[in-house]
Length: 176
Image (cartoon, rainbow, N blue to C red; front, side, top):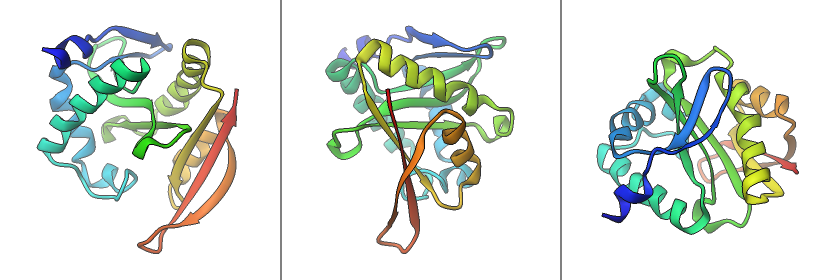
């Protein structure tokens, strides 16, 4: 099965507290736990939690991204417990040219500095292993915590755009 082969679980990089690896089929439960959380989902995409079926489809999209680009979304494991605590990745939503950094953690792991730990490592991975020279990040104007994470990692505010629903999205970027 192509999806199982692509979702190998191979380690991408490690930080002091986290192991970043390719997705496994068994990541469906943790993926749903992160992205179905109403509080966490408000910062992702359209702000709505995703369904179990959408998580299943995302596994296939990610496997396709691994095959096509060599990267995509990854699981974040706690190095001590091997528990999946979140997800991160470099993606091209809607086929956009620039790679976009994404990350989300189980709410029980917010406020521990894990995003600030993983974002620079993910940027370094993209630059060193895939020669990605420009990365963008989009963040809701109200999401101050993520803005701080991006700024600590060296991303610079590039633009503010008004969405169809009237909200504002900030666009950050970094050149490597």
